[in-house]
Length: 464
Image 1 (cartoon, one colour):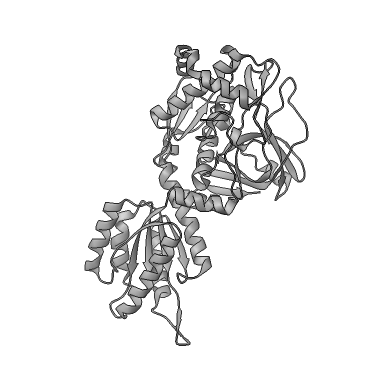
Image 2 (cartoon, one colour):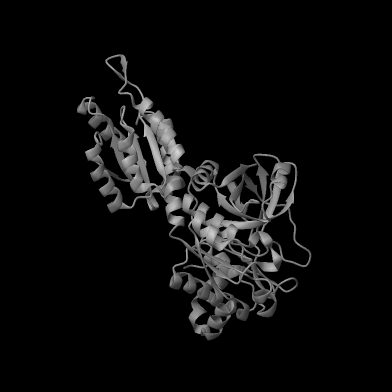
């Protein structure tokens, strides 16, 4: 890993396509028909649907068409064998509803896309096989059964249909990945931050994310056991590639880079998908070495952040899975009519910073080497998970254009990695819906993707 390397930034649409290619959503398609209609139509429309779905980058397996009750056994078998991210129930014509429910029983806990074809034109005449009447029965039945589903309707060549299916596929894939994700938590919530705390079992039940907790002592012990020679190469690269401020010594760099190696080793050793660490006060005051630089480096490789904030890191993980991008976070420092100022006190993934990494020595409110770089400009999405009174989840989503911030600093501190976000909405709407001070940051506009994921995971969204 090159300490000064920044990740290239492709246009947002290209990155969305890349994200789909990086981890293809996996689905099983079960087409449903009726014995009274010509097989030529049912087969043709199934093939056109398969082609459209594969064109969206979906890793797809299609069952034989289900027309009678005895056909359901093969579809159920395929579902058991494949364990897909989601099931696609394709209504080609009028159907007998029990056939659908028979199959869906095999996947009743998973996300389901209910897709109904509509009318088609042949030789200048509009024709129908009756799929929408059949879908009307199934849609209501799914609702009464409490299934987690989305209903789309239209033919395979319709752009709106493809767009809606693509959004659902990505969200279903993310939901599946979350259920196989573990976040490493070193320490717990800093400085009494209630909003950084979490309910372990409800988090696991509702979102699927596991949290593996350790004390920061494991970090300190591993740093102390590591030989200086093990990070000599990283220190050399840092001195060549970073803009290093006054007062930063070789010893400071050595400790910071040992901490980076330690955190990276822990992530790899335990298979963590993300990392949260409590900095204040154990590392910042007693150990006298903040994790700002280690996290700014590691943030290029895996979602991570500090102050022990679990709702934050889960939000970062969601954005990372949706986009396949580096994801950072910041504190909202001020809110004005059309903009906000956001930045963390020494952390930003170097891959999101403008130009060479800038680092400096801090010794007032906390001690160690901190990141003083500025975020690059561009379109951004900010998001934050929170709890409602009944302990269900909500998410605040903010979009805007990141610009270079006005010069500012917290009293006694170095300049923060920060940005001013020119909001799509109003500043007061943001302020009145603040879910904490910490918000995840991703470059691009991902409102639709987050809203789709919120719908799938029963998270109440608020866009401002």
